[in-house]
Length: 133
Image (cartoon, rainbow, N blue to C red; front, side, top):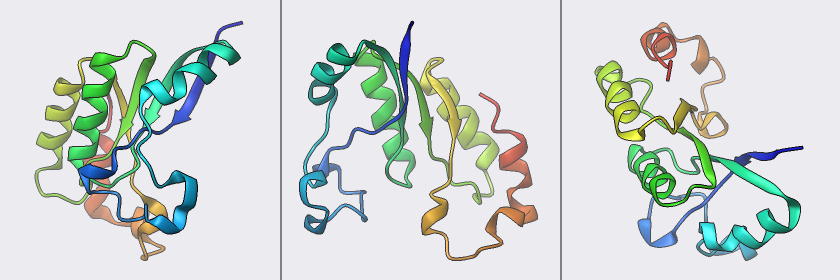
């Protein structure tokens, strides 16, 4: 059986876009990189991972794309895009191109959005319709 970790994160604190990640998070408040996970992947027989963004920035998505280029264990990426940007179509296309086939989708940081009806906004229609990677 081939095992894939379908939701996994890497981050580097010095990047500065993880507002949620503070010293109160205890053992999570440190960098997590591919080398940190490799022993567990090997021990568990996991052949690949899907890397999911942990910050609501396109810079984070690009950081993940760079990691995927450098580490073959990353089979896919779920990134972030500004879903409400007037040029979201262009942003999505650019990130897809930069992803080199590794970018598989986008997700909003829904837990941080106070508007409980946010997903119902018609201003998101273009982004949600065009989020085909």
